[in-house]
Image (cartoon, rainbow, N blue to C red; front, side):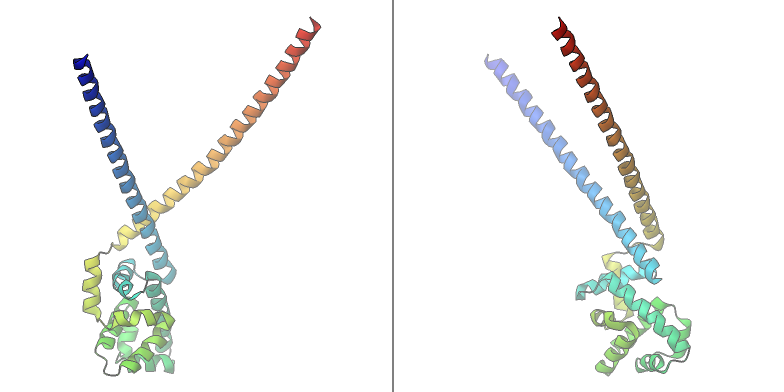
Length: 231
């Protein structure tokens, strides 16, 4: 009896270890799946902002990584760049206010005309970092980038080299990777929608079958009752 009890205890202990291992594996898989889902959704969000405001995905991440330290967001960066794009064109077209704002930062019209929007942002960052008149620089940045400049000014004061270094240190995905994640998210959402639609149709079919079987059973029961009564 003692030997049998010892054997049962050993089997139970092994069973418990196996279940614990399986449960841990399940939790690990769930954590990995959740992490992948979050990454895919993040990629889709970045690409959406990139498309919406015509801003490079990689550079958006770089600047946003640093801006977050001061309470800014990727959308703040995208909106600021969108406003800067508008004022860049205004300055090129001869708008005096836009030109003066660039001049107050020491940014030449040659730079305004030739630099891409992210390059122009970094040029303004260096100008802000080196500005002798802090208030004038803030006013110029606010005019060129709109209300979102308020949360980005402390980022701009770091200068382009620091923004790039800190942004890269936190981590950025390439434009290609972001686009691929956005496509994966679109495929997943389409699959979810397909499953939802077909799942609904299957449920309706099952409901109709159950109701039909219920009617058939009810009819059969009534016929059986009448036959029994006649006897």
